[in-house]
Structure formats: C-alpha cells, structure tokens
Length: 162
Image 1: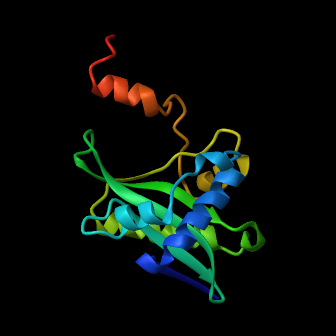
Image 2: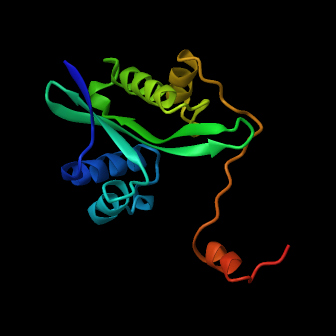
C-alpha cells in the first residue's frame, strides 16, 4: 500500500539519502553535497525554501519529491518547480512516481499555479517517456543555464564585464 506524506524535520537524513541515491542514478554521485544541517535550515525553518513529499510503500520510505514555488512573469502566476523526483529502483513500476506527480499537480492547482516545471537529463529516456506519458512536453530549444562558484562570486563582485 502506498502512502504520500509531507516530510518533517525528522526526515532530514532520509532526504539526504534520497538526494545521494538520485545523484548516483544521474551519474554525479560526488556532486550531491547537501547535508542534514542544510536540509533542516532551508526546508524546515521559519521560512522554508522548499517542500518535500515522502512516498512510503508498506510503511517503508521508498521515494521523494522536492519542490518549491517560483513565478512566471509571462503568465503572471506562480509556478510549481520540481527539483527532484526519485523512486528507489526496487519499487519502480508500482505507480509511486505517478502518485507523486499527481499530488504535485494537485498542489500546483491548490496554489494557483499556472505551470508545473522541471528538468530531465537528455539521456534519461525512461524518465522522458514517463513524463510524456503524463502529458508533459519536453521543451526543446530551451537550455538550462547555471552559474556557480568562482564565476558567481566574480559576477557579484563586479569582476565580469560583457
């Protein structure tokens, strides 16, 4: 039997474990440096920066979805952004991922969101097929852009000119 529940502060270690399992699946195990302390600080303080749903199968935590709200200037409405979705391989194919996505879609609508956005790695064909089967559209032509580390600091400090 499947249960979905909001995570609590006592789930911080579990959330970090899921993040690391996802990073391993996505071929970047060393990139996941989140800690229990950062999860507690940013997800369960006075102003949470994200929310987490935990999926339990027969009482055992087997997956999660971490999301937050952003804003679409073009739509003039909030957007639910899914940062991470992960279901442990041993329980895939039981409807857990679909249940998480349905709950997130309902959360988006309950929060007056016009859109529900996320990214998927271009090599991850099983996930792409899964998302498209739900009615999602892969946004070809849009490329993710990221700035971090030294480049971020340099720009903030005025060290970069176009």
